[in-house]
Length: 496
Image 1 (cartoon, rainbow, N blue to C red):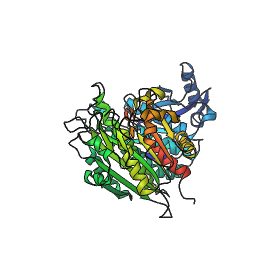
Image 2 (tube, rainbow, N blue to C red; image 1 turned 90 degrees about the vertical axis):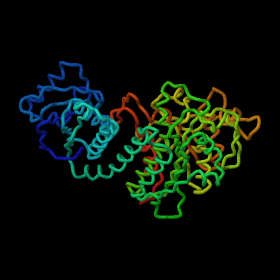
Image 3 (tube, rainbow, N blue to C red; image 1 turned 45 degrees about the horizontal axis):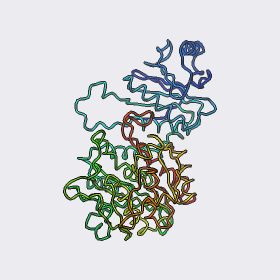
Image 4 (tube, rainbow, N blue to C red; image 1 turned 30 degrees about the vertical axis):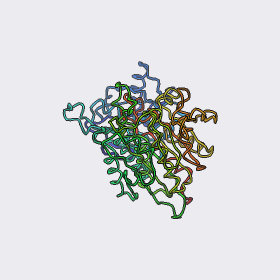
């Protein structure tokens, strides 16, 4: 799909649809008002006979009036005029794209005259994200299913400026889509070694990649991570991704750590069969970290950063870890395993310790599809934030608001850690059924020492079987990539 920015007077042409904005309260966009008076009056009358109110994403397709050179006319609601912003434009443009694609048109022209250049830029970014599809395994699609929009033109007051700004965002769009691809792959294709191989392919962007196998991890004492993967025929991996973009090569890096369970059966504590196929997504934290590191490299971010991915499969063969086993972590602390379906925190325990021990980072943020408890608490659309550092937590919440990846800070009462006391080891790795997301965070905190740290329990934010977000088609969302990139951009890059 080709996206371009054009000035006033651009032609829609055969097979194309013109999209115009209407705000709440009968406030038409400058583009709609600029139409021939009789023509705009006809459109207003057509809208007035329906229930169109102009709320964000509301759409109405109209018969193309005489005098308009287009195969179709789409009016898209843009919400209150006073709330019009780049973030809203991203959603509105994605709604327009989805409507045109569903209708089978090959071209879209969206008229954003009267808006700032960054509005047009963000509209293009929203369309790029909305156009994502994971179709590589479909062999018998109908012509209608294969339809896609070939060209998108955005009419802007300053097209050259918007085009330059959009070019800077293309790396972030590619990174989000790369993460979506990883999450979407079936686990017979994307197992730990294959995940690591795809990470290594990103070295073309300037990232420095190291892969540790089981022998290296055993030498480091990573008994927790290795215990999770010991029931799988696939070898566990630890991927280390570095970006060195700071003007000071000795500057301590920011660090991101991702849970990468490429498939989670639950191990000996086997999951129910219903929806187990969705456990291909249990590596979405690692996918988000990979995408974020790719985004930083793509835009040459002025920061030193490191990403650590713990890549395993949790399988129930004769060598699998058992409930009641005691493992020794890289930190030297021992852990009594209670439920082998609570495997992600064991992976993070060794990955976080390795990160803080080797890199001495400014902070660590881990991302994990960790608990069902966080979904019960926050639903499927909001991730849970746990942290030992208020400044880091506040920065993440700010980046969450700016990026559109929603977070809510959760409490970490000290008394909840008592649920992790073990009969035979330094700790258990799970508590009782109450406050499960909190006790999981309390467990992970035991492996970060005094490093500022945040744990993002992202739940089902990473996967939408039926998405209600116009920029994210059904399936993998890429949640976390924009969040981490925004965090770095807003708070941790070198000053100009």
